[in-house]
Structures are given as structure tokens and as C-alpha cells.
Amino acid sequence: MIRFENLSMVYRRGGTRKLVAHQINATFPSGRAVALLGRNGAGKSTLLKIIAGTLKPTGGRVSSTGSISWPVGFAGSFHPHLTGIQNTRFVARIYGADSRELVDFVEGFAALGGHFRLPVQTYSAGMRSRLAFGVSMGLPFDTYLVDEVTSVGDAAFRAKSAEVFRARMERAGAVVVSHSMIQVRELCDMGAVLENGELTLYDDLEEAIAHHQHVMAGAA
Image: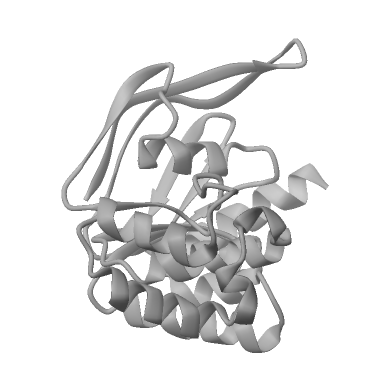
């Protein structure tokens, strides 16, 4: 369960005031996969960071039960001078996981070949995302935060990513940011629309998609 209590987030970018959240009160139930929808710039990725605890809100709070992942696919916490294997082992130690099991999973899933044994600073952005997604999926969380990560790589890798994600959803929940309604329908069972600082939660995914498409049509 993830609960927003009078959550507010305002920041300034280039002298412009940006409202992401205005006194939001809502609850994402445990074990549900929630599609977080909204136009570009609405603040979806910012909201994920607040849920993850990596960004402090302007006001209010987020409370939760169970463990929550970092935004799946986020590679910003990897040490650039360490290899993919070394970074994977480091994350395993932090989360109390078996480092050998995690390394084996990530090596097989991310399919980085010899690059897995090279420093992460030599990776392309796509390779870092593949490593990060593999590490994320190799660890058990009660709720996974996902930000467009299954769009990484070729069609075969995207299909594999979606398959692994669906397997994790059999025993966990998720908050998923995606611009693909096909992907949203494949992965999620409820939705929320973020617009002008307001979050509208729908138990019916199709109602959320209809609201989102109405917002997008108005912005066109």
C-alpha cells in the first residue's frame, strides 16, 4: 500500500514555477499494478521519485507498507568506475541478497556479454538501463516503480522484459509510467491520472485511460 497524505510538490525551473502535486490524498492498494498516466511534463517521474524516497516533497508525506523499489531501470546510482558485476554485487549486499544468485540472473537477463565485466562508465545509455532493469527485477520487492523501462532495447529484449515483469506482478504490486496504452493494458489493472497537480485514481483501468486520452486531446 502507498498512501499520499496532503502531498504537495512545487519547484522552479528556469524561473518558471512548476506544480507537480497539490495536497494529494490517495491510496494505491497493495498488490495492484497502477498505471500512472499524464501528459509530458505533468510530473509523473517526479512523483515516482517522491514515492521512492529519493526526492523530498514540498509538503505532506508518502507512507507505505512493504518494500518499494527504486525506479526500475534507473542507473544513476551505479558507480561508473566499477564493472557491471561489481555494481550488481554491491547492490546485493545492500539489500541482503545472495550476490551469486543476483549476478547470475543479471548476467543472463541483461545479455551484456563481455561488457558485464567492464566499467559502467564505458556503457551506452541503453546498456546501463538493461543492467539496471536486470538488477531491479532480480531483487524481490512488494512494489516496483517502473518508468518506461520496458521500452529499452530491441523487440526481443522488450518482450523478455515484459514477461519477467508480469512474473513479478504475480506476487507484487507496481506503479507504472508508460506512454503506450498497449503496454499499460498488458501490465496494469488500475490507473491514476496526474494533471495540474491533481491525481485522480480509478479502480477501472479503462476509465483512467479514457480520462488520460481526454487530457491529451485537449493538449493537442
